[in-house]
Every structure is written in structure tokens, then in C-alpha cells.
Image 1 (cartoon, rainbow, N blue to C red):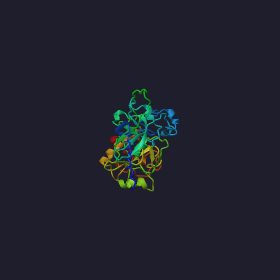
Image 2 (image 1 turned 30 degrees about the vertical axis):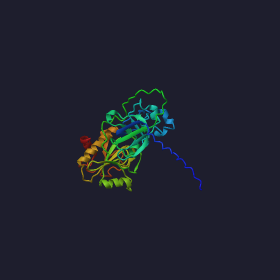
Image 3 (image 1 turned 90 degrees about the vertical axis):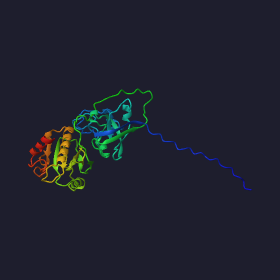
Image 4 (image 1 turned 180 degrees about the horizontal axis):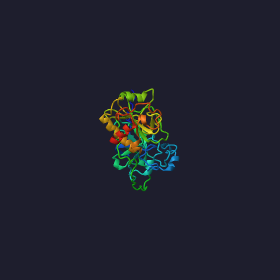
Length: 342
């Protein structure tokens, strides 16, 4: 007879351990803006950062947040931030998230509208509560997430606090917050469509706004600024219906006014050579110019038509901005429009 085999007892397989959700140390969602870098004239030349000190410039953990040298005429860390790096500011309660914890934390920053997300480092306290915004992001981070001023952003720090038990909590510190000097909101940007035709300002201060006429349709203009053989571009394009497209970040130099690009912001207006501004287009342009003047401390007298811009190396070589701002081709026409509308 065959030998009976003993039944093997069923081996118990332990159930997979449940993954514990990370502890949320900080979370906020709301409107955002941008800050930091050489062209953030909402920050004073000497303004520092709440979370970092000059000594951190030599710390390899943090050095890459900053430009190799301070921008001309500045001494603070705020304007020395590298605008292409991923950093941000929120209104911290240091009793809940200590300064030291924030210095070594990375946050998940997300655009709730499109799901794009990136890790970024906290660097400062802000923005001012009066702005009704919850966070300020670096220009590079905002561009990567396709965020424009007053879009919604979500920021989360999820980690176990690495603070020894019994550590005395820091006192709550409140600051006015950076970016509070511009009383105007930046008008909504319909879409950021980056042009490859841009370059560094090399420390140049933005001190003028240049107004253009596209002399072509919106699709043709956007295509030209993306793939055209002339390699021209502008910071903003305003359609006839008032929609604003941004194609070059303010911190970069666009190719819109030969000889005057380093220190200017270029605004293209969709229209033909004999067109006047459409009503919605004029309103959007005035709103954008108003924000730019306050943001970069530009005098109203430094808004120019293309052909009349100081430094333009081909004066008399263009009819731009044509008749968009008035029948006469003159800087006086531009100045009168600015006086009446901006």
C-alpha cells in the first residue's frame, strides 16, 4: 500500500503592510504670483530672505539657488535668487513649521488645472496678505507649471519633522512680505507659448515698454515667433478680443526692437497697418502697461512706439506701430494715448 503522506499545514503569508500616509506638515491652495531675481523690482535692492542668510551662498546645499554674483546695484539675497531655479514663498507660521525645518524641506508644488507638479524649496515669507495670494513662485517654477499671476496653485510639504523632542518652538514671525509695492494686478494671461528666440538680459534693468503692431493675424504672429526664420519675438501678444499671450518671460530679452532689447518689454498688438486698436484690445493693453510700469518702476514717459524707441538702431526703418494708437505716426501720438488710457 502506498504510504500516506502527511498533509502540509498551510503556510500563512503575512498581509502586505499598509502604507502609512505621509504626515502633512503644510498645505495651502490659492492664487499665486512670481518673485525673485534681478528683474523683481518689487523687492528692494537690499531685501533679504526670511529663510536664508548671506553665509548660505557658500553652502553647497543652497548655493545653486543664487546667481554667481549679485546683480549690479543690489546687496540683498532676494534679487540675487536665480529666477530659473524652483523656489517659493508662503506665509509661514514658525510655530508649526520651524525655520530650520523649512530650510531643509522640499515641497510639492502643483498646478491643479493641468496636473503639472514639481519639487521646490521654501526660501522666504510672503506674499503680503493684502495681495489675496497665498504664494509667490520663482519665474522658472511658474513657467514650468504653466502658471500665470493669479492662477491657482497647490503647495504641500509632507514629511516627518526632524526636530528633537523638547525643542523650543520659534516665536511666530510676521513680515510685511515681498511683492507688495505693485498696487495693480497683472491681467490674465490666456496662454504662455514660449518662443525660442530670447536671450539673457545680462543684468540689464527693464526701463521701457515698446508697443508694436503685428501687421498679421494672431496665428501667423504666434507661428512667426516660434519658428520664423527672422528669429523675432516679443514678450506679449494682445489679440483683437483682448486675450493676452506671453511668449518670453519678463526676465529674458526678446528680439523685438533692435538696439533696445536689453532694457525693454515688447508688446505686440494684432492688427493691420490701417487698423486702430479694438476696444477690448486697448483695455487689455492699458492694464498690462499699467502693471508693467508699477512692477519695474518705469516712468510713464518711457512707453514708446517701435519706431521712436531710444536706442532703436533703425529709426525711420519701420512704420510700426502704424495707426493702432492714432492717425499720426509719432511718439506724441503714443504719449497722448498713454496719458488718456494708462
